[in-house]
Length: 257
Image 1 (cartoon, rainbow, N blue to C red):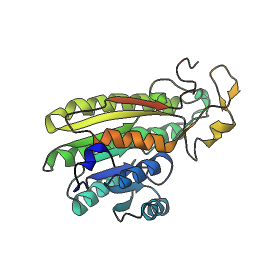
Image 2: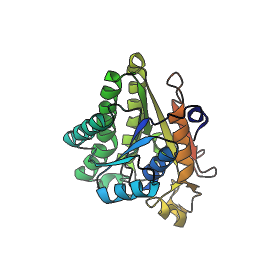
Image 3: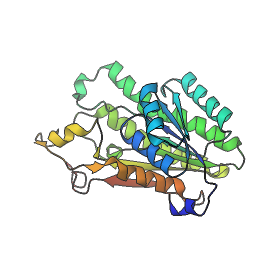
Image 4: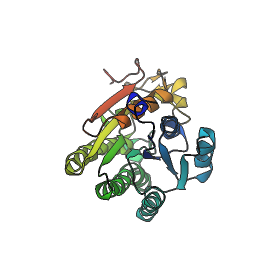
């Protein structure tokens, strides 16, 4: 449990993690549950969400199947949160798809739209739902943490759709941070580089570099990301980490290209 929460034995704040069934979302959800949060697990498939809830063994996880790209599904998610808990203290906007590995000229409109719908529109819809609930609840306020990615700063080859959405997340983060001030809503962004998950395991066998070479890249454990998110979440609302970059120390980011 974080130091701020050690001083509060009644700590049972409510957090929502999207994309909570696998990868970084799973690691973040489990870390928040360990830290005393009641955690709403959102994702398209109920089976992985239930598995995370059972793994936690806390009885404080609520699995809600959700397609973040669909307004009706997101509305139902927040209606459920309000009905069960009456408030939301933290949103971790994590759900996303990669869309990496397609030559720019070969990106089909449907592929582009899918990445935009999930990564950008999904983050907007969930942030808007959280913003509305945080604005009306008492005590007012809360925290939104967006998953930006290293690609919010520098692209990989053949990643136009993913990179475009992650750059857009930075603009969304700044806008929410500004518009949330008057409601005690803090918004920050965590930019993650090379956390080892099911989807990123391929990098351990080599990934395309800007110069056309294939190189094996260093990785970090996803639990390191989860601990960073818990730290961001635990800060008082008078303090905000606007942007955090967390990465495998020797990954090709500084000097990439």
